[in-house]
Image (cartoon, rainbow, N blue to C red; front, side, top):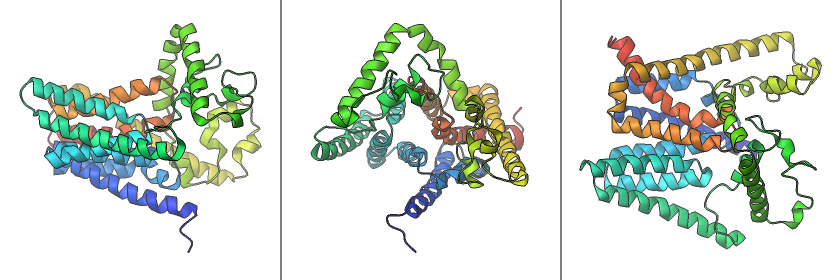
Length: 356
């Protein structure tokens, strides 16, 4: 069996990441709450089918979430060596996605608040920052030696931002912004370096936002809707490898013929797919409902716990960072891991201990 230079390698790597994520979810929930809640969080993880489907895809969601989860786990251990590792994994998450800065900011706010209240130690902050900047320096130096520029994080930020800030912006991706006559079009891209392209796209983005600040802000609700209203990040891939209904709304918008949408699949296959999507979204909407309900019902427990506050800060800051660019269902995946932790508390308190 061929492993190297094959897509099989990605699948094997993703299976390992998926296993690590379950272990980290269990351990983090045990530290913050207890083992009973940890078992509930693992059950929620298994029921949420995107966790299984992402194993089949070559996306950064899984790797990024494992890096974030590792950082949170070591942060919660509250030892000198663990603070250092928390910073290192924070740096790894930033290397994968700039969204990792949301976790760094969340850590810093909680740590500084604890130091102010004389409940924390400055040494923890120092170890965290040493770990963080050591990875940034190491990764940036490697790219500098290879490409002549210090780059320590994903460089597609300006590209994503421009797709969400243009005359045709609708809160989601608008890939045509790079076509001829549009704001992101570059006539001879081969003559520019990646850095020059990024600078051009960022300049175009800033220019549009400066000229249309209110329109940009008005897109925020649409971006949030795009992130949370639908949740087929990877579920369709569990059934079909190439299925247009995965992007059914886009198919309708672009007036794609029904025969092309069906993709040659039988009615039975389509029905089975629809049942799978129905089951998954039922689970997904229940997870969201219990999260919102639990935050309201058990707000005294949640908002008086600095660990819960840190997790909520990560979700909040992360969503705000996402609003700068575009909204997409897969961008909420790292937050679902956190929501499982909260829901394990809420389900345990409301159904198992009858705290109503």
